[in-house]
Image 1 (spheres, rainbow, N blue to C red):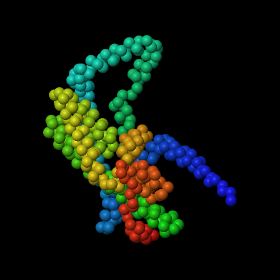
Image 2 (cartoon, rainbow, N blue to C red):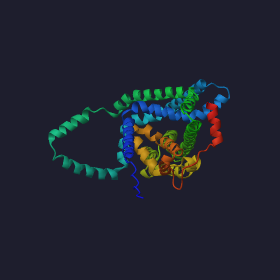
Image 3 (tube, rainbow, N blue to C red):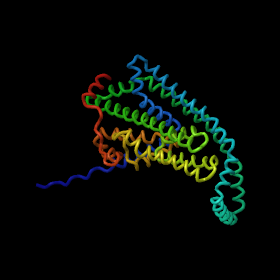
Image 4 (cartoon, one colour):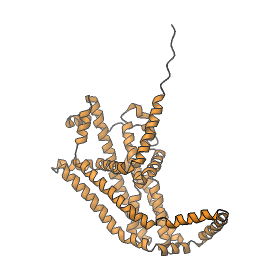
Amino acid sequence: MNETPDAPAPRSHWAVTGLFIIGCGVVMVLARTFLMPLILAFLLSLTFSPIRRWLHRRGLPDGASAGLIVLMLVALSVAGAVSLAGPVQNYVQDGPALLRDVEFKLRGINDLVEQVSDATEQVSELTDRDDEAQEQIAVDTSPGLFTQAVTTVPFVMAQIGLTLVMLFFLIASGDLFYEKIVAVNPTFHDKRRAIGIVYDIERKISRYFLTITVINAGLGLAIGVALWLLGMPNPALFGVLAFVLNFIPFLGAIAGAVLTFGIGIVSLDTVGAAALVAGVYIALTSIEGQFVTPYAVGRSLKLNPVAVFVAVAFWGWAWSVVGMIIAVPVLIVVRAFSEKFDSLHGLGLFLSGRGEGIIPPAKTEAEMDGAVESQS
C-alpha cells in the first residue's frame, strides 16, 4: 500500500504573524499620544483593583473608591512637586555658574577635550563656509532648552489629566468589564479560562507595581539618608530621583548615578567626593536589584533579563520615559497570557527567568468556577 508523505506544515501563518507584530509596533509608535494614557490608566486600574474590592466589601461604592484613589495620586504628585520645586529651580537658575565650576574641577579632562576640539576645528576648516554659515543660522534660530520645556509642559499636563480621568472611569466601573468577558464567551470552559486569565494578570500587575513602589520608596529613603551623611545638599531631591528612576530597569540606576555624580562635582569639594556619592548610589541600587527585588517579587514575576532589556529599549524608543516604565508590566501581561495557551508555551518559556518554566495558575479550578459563577 502506497503511503503518501506528510504534507509540509503551512508557513504562511508565520508571515502573517510577523506582519501583525510589525503593524502593532507601527501603531504603537504613531498612536502613542492616544495609547500612552490609555494603557497607563489600564495598568494603574489593575494595580488598584484589589484596593477597590477591599473598599467595596466595606461598603464604599466603586465611584467613591475611584475618586479617593485619584485624589490620593494627585495629592502625592502635587506634594512631591511642591517640595522639590525649590531645589530644582535653584539648580536651573545657577546653571551657568555650575557649568563653570564643573569646568574648573575637570581641568584634566578639559585639556583632552580641547585637543579633540582643535582637531575638529582643523577638519571643519576644510568644509564649505556656506554650509558652516547655514549650520550656524540653524543653531542660532533653534529654540532653547527652557523654551522647549515651556512648550512641552501643557502637553504633559494634558496627558496626565487624560490618564487620571480614564483611571477614574476604569476604577468606577468596578467589575463591569469582567462581567462582559464572562458574558461574551459561549461555553463554561471558555468563561472559566477567560476570567482566570484576567484575574491572574490583575494579581501579577498589582503585586508588581505595589511591591516595586514599596521597594523604590525604601531605596529612595536609603539613598537620601546616605547622601545626607556624605554631605550632599538637598538629599531629599536625590531620594525622590532614585524612587522615580528605579521604575526604569537597568537605565534608571545608571541615569541616577550620572546625575548624582554631576551635581556632586559642583556641590562637593573634590571630584573624588563626587565619585564616592555616585558609588554609594550604584551600590545601593545594585543591592536592591540583585537581592531585594528578586526576593520580593517572587518566582512568578521573574523575567528573562535580555527580554526585559530589549523591551525597555523598544518602549523607550517608542514612548520615551513612560514606555520604559511600562515595559516590564507589558511583559508580565504577555507572560500571563502565554501560561494559559499551549500555542504560546514557547514564548512564555523564553520570557521566564533562568531555570524557570511556565508557572501554573495560582487559582485552582474550583476557585475559577466560583469566580465565573459570581460574575454570571
